[in-house]
Length: 124
Image (tube, rainbow, N blue to C red; front, side, top):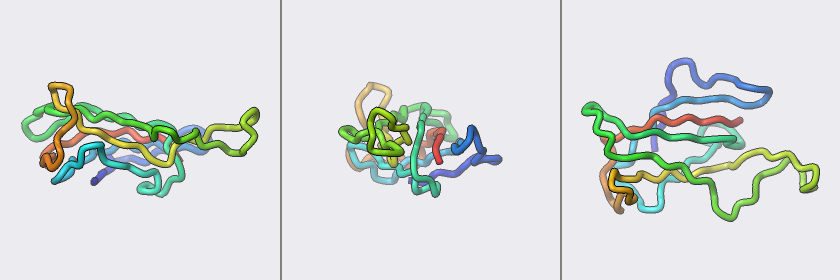
């Protein structure tokens, strides 16, 4: 995984969050199930939201769509253990799956190194 932030990012938003818009390069050998992207990659403790776009390259192929999945079975991180008064604090990772134009996930060992998606990360 390689993310390259666009000029001017990260940008502070709100009281304790930041926004990064980046270009994410696909892997040389994709592993079915997706790529794990962690908030710590950006020096953050959490993701509040992550979005992805349709893939592009020098030919503007749009062969894949990036789909972001939050961890299944992970309780929302909270600022305290008192659920009634808990304040959600986001997820520490997400999974990015590359979905082909026909709606299926890219196969194991697919070379996606010439594909890119625009990513939007919000967190802190």
